[in-house]
Length: 120
Image (cartoon, rainbow, N blue to C red):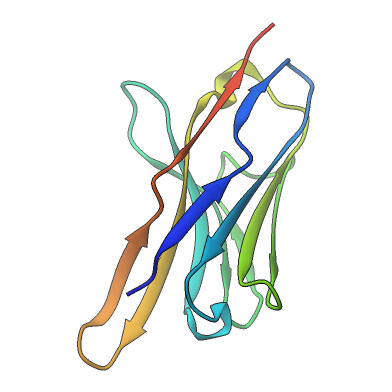
């Protein structure tokens, strides 16, 4: 099991920045992959970025260019730095852990989500 708690969401004007953070309940080195996704009203959840236990990153179309994923293995956190925010970035942002255990194989775990609103 992996519990994830997101923080850092809020209201920001267009062009502004926000940094989201996700705290994991276990050593993130042992989590195969951590990532950020978002879901806007009426839309499907979409990938922003992932980072593997080895530190390799991958970005979805929505995360390329303005967003940066990073991790702190000493604090067991994964962060998402978001710059030059646009109104279309408004969504609920979710932290995800793709974790392997001998009993259950690979499983997805999700945080509760944090709202990001970009508006003037």
